[in-house]
Image (cartoon, rainbow, N blue to C red; front, side, top):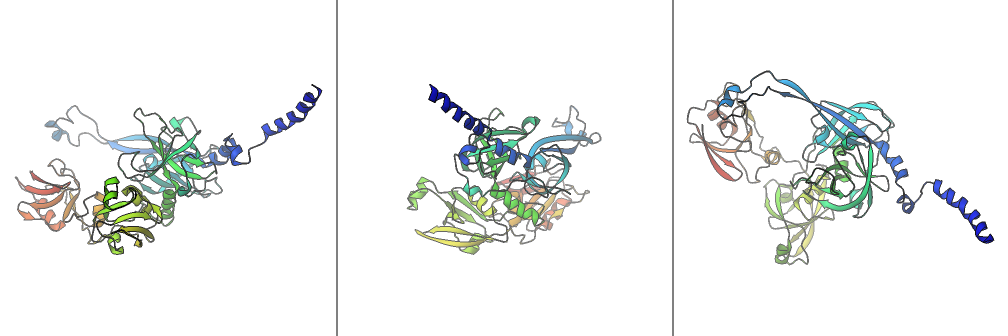
Length: 458
C-alpha cells in the first residue's frame, strides 16, 4: 500500500502536465482538433452578398395563354433585394478570397466578416458558374491569416478533415469527418461537369464556400454542396479540389475576369467492361474518343477517333469529366501529356492547351428594335460558340444566340441552328438577319434543335 501511494504521487503530476500540454504530433492531434482549429479558422470568413433585381407587378392574367400578351411589360419595374449567405477562405495575406459562384457571382454588394469580427467590402475578380467558383479581392489589407493550398492528388480516402463555415448563419462552426471518396464526377449536381472530393463531414446551407481542411492545416477543397433528398446533411458532401482553385488563382492573377478552359474539341465514352474486353485490356479504364472537331488540339497532336486516352499528365482518367478536369489544371498556354492506346500500343503525346478558337469569326448580328423579332441575335457557329452553347461538335451554320423580346413567343430557342427561312438557305448571319428583319405573315423557318429538325411558322 505504501508503494502504491508513492507511485500515485509520482504519476499524478505527469498526468496533470499531459492534460495541459498541446498536442505536437499527428497521433496526438487526432485526439483534439483544438490546435488545428486555432490555426485554420481565422482564415475562413463569413460572406454576406446582396443582389438587386428588377421585378414587375404581377397580375392574375400574367400566366394566361391569351391575356398575357396584353400585360407584357405591365407596371413599373420595382427593385428587389436578394440576400445570400455563405463562407469563403482567404488564400493570401493581401486579401485574395475563394468562395462559391452561387454565393457571390451576381452580387452588387459583398461584405466579408473575419473570424475576429473585422468587416471589409470585396469585389469579384473572376467567377465561373459552371465550376461554381469565384475569386474575390479585399482591397487595402495586409497581413491577413490565410490557408496554403495542398496538392489535391495527395489526398487519400480515409483522411481526417474539418469543414469550417457559417451554416444557417449561426456563426463560424467546425465539423469533422473523413474523406469518403475521390474523383466524384457529376454526383453532386447530376450534370457530369463537376469533379469533387467527397466527405462525410456535415455540410449545411451557409457552409458553401467554406474550407475543407486536412490535418496538416492545408486547404484540400472548398465545400460546395451536399447530396440530400431532405435538404439536410446526410453525410455526403462535396468539395471542389484545391488544384482547381489554384488554376483559378493563376488566371485571376493574370487579369482574367472569367475562367478560360482549355478546349478538348472531342467527345468520349467511358471504357467499360465490354469495351475493355474488345480492346483486349486487362481492366476497364480510360476514355475512348468518339468524335473530334477538325480544329481539336487532340487531332493536332495525333489523336484519332477510336484512340483511348488512358492518362493525363500520368494521372489515370476514368470519365470525360475527369479528363476535362485534368486538362483544366493547366493554363491555356501550357501543354499536357496524354497517354494514348492505339491497336495495343501505348505511347505519350503532348497536347497543347488552347481556348476554343474564334475561327471563323462569329459575326454576331442583333436585329433592331423596329424589326419583326426585335433584339434577336444570330451568330456564325465556330468552336467558341459550340463550347459556349454546348452544340454538337459537327454543328455548322448560323445559330440563335439570344431570343430578344419575341423570339420565344414564335417558337425559337437559344441554340436553334437556322437552315432555311422562307425558302432561302441560311449560310451567314446576314442571311438570317435579312430574312427575319422584316418577317411577313406566314414566315416559315426550318432549324436543327438538339439533333432533330423542327419547322416553325409565324
